[in-house]
Amino acid sequence: MSEAGIKEHSSPIKKPKRLINVVQFALLVAIMLIAMLSQLVTTGFDASKNDPALSDKAAWAPRLKGGNRSLADTDVKAAVDYFAGMAK
Image 1 (cartoon, rainbow, N blue to C red):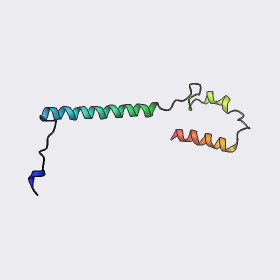
Image 2 (cartoon, rainbow, N blue to C red):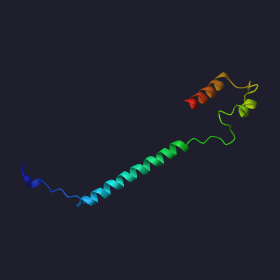
Image 3 (cartoon, one colour):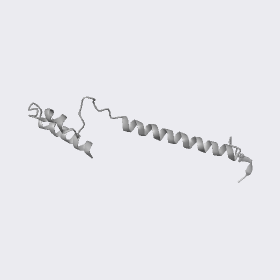
Image 4 (spheres, rainbow, N blue to C red):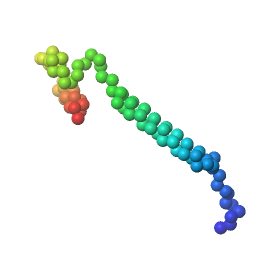
């Protein structure tokens, strides 16, 4: 292969100190993105402020007493599946 078509490689990073700075900046950006993503994931679920905690039996007693006979079985099953999924 002839060397006439080969171009010399050039890089904007010419010194080792500059390379270290670029790597540090890249790691900082990655860590910041991970932190923002984890914050979004953990705070993405906004439960209603009026709903009691699942573990507060006294607050749930009036809501569960007697039930709601107008609900279809599929609605009740969906609610049970939802709360069971939250417990996992």
